[in-house]
Image 1 (cartoon, rainbow, N blue to C red):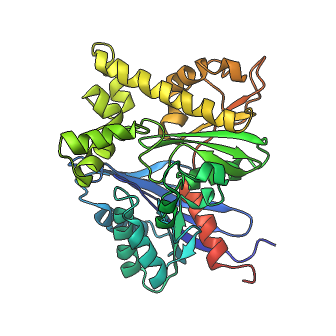
Image 2: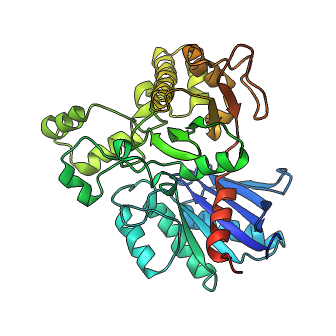
Amino acid sequence: MAGPALHVLALNSGSSSLKFGLYRVDRRDAVARLCGEAEAIGHSAGVLRLRDADGTVIHQETAAVADGVQAFRRIVRLLREARVPAPDAVGHRIVHGGPQLRTHAVIDGTVLARLEAACAFAPLHVPAALAVVHAAQARFADLPHVACLDTAFHADLPEVSRVLPLDRALQADGVYRYGFHGLSCASILASWPDAPARLVIAHLGSGASVTAVCDGRSVDTSMGMTPSGGVMMATRCGDVDPGVLAWLAREKGMDAPALERLVDHRSGLLGVSGISGDLRRLREAARTEPAARLAVAMFVLSVRKQIAAMAAVLCGMDALVFTGGIGEHDAALREAVCAGLAWAGVRPGPGAAPADAPPAAGAHCQVRIIPTQEERQISRHVYALVAGPAR
């Protein structure tokens, strides 16, 4: 039996975007009714897009969107005009739940307090998401709201991966590896229930991470205590010598906010190129700009190194999955990353492989492209918590 169906509004807050979807969910599946995104939030040329159940764009508008709250209000208006069923529950992607919230949870006063405390761990993401939570609670005051955590997928990391090589006393303050893009990783496993035992997931977008999955469980991941570590990203530095930060504080007088602005907003592809954090723009610029070529090459190498590291954690790699905006759509990037992984049995073939392709000839590691479905995964988690086993 499928059980009772609920309509779930999934809200996926990013640092400069708000993706959303209205899903009809039962015990068997989650089916999109409408979905879309508000992009370039905070810029003068923001885009709001709405798609139907088939993925066809049925509405698009370009206008300045000041923040996630304004984007949410426009999304509610579009859903109302589309005459789709009203939601029965609302799910919110929360990047970091902090040390006191490690599992998805219905939002109440205690959960809100723990999320407020988690802002210190991800100031680029959590405050913006909480602003949307408050706006959604005001708009849908009678509905249950659920916090769906990116960190939950990694909550049971083995100690050897979870513990950071710092004074062990700091663990009491929550200083350890959390891991992120967990909703994306969970959606990959939901899309590929027969995935092989040793799986490496490369989620590549403006934020990027690589995760080692063994028998469906996260055993290591590139991001650490915050979403700033690991792979070089659009504007985030990824892993960097911690002595550099100490030097900047001592010799340049940078305080914590200045260091955060540097590592989160002025580093990565943007920092190296001095042009943009957008890989598409850098490819065009690379024809004439050496700094753009260097930034692209560094990104490729950073991703390849993290994939190799996760293969070492797993003692081999049965499959490599590319997902996220760059991972799904940039064939040249996938080819460049895989070109240095032949020793691991990776043979992507021309243009890399679609989601259902068999391994390329001579390969023992499958390379797949599986679209991330974070909003759909949010709706599943909401249903599990709100519908309950007895409903």
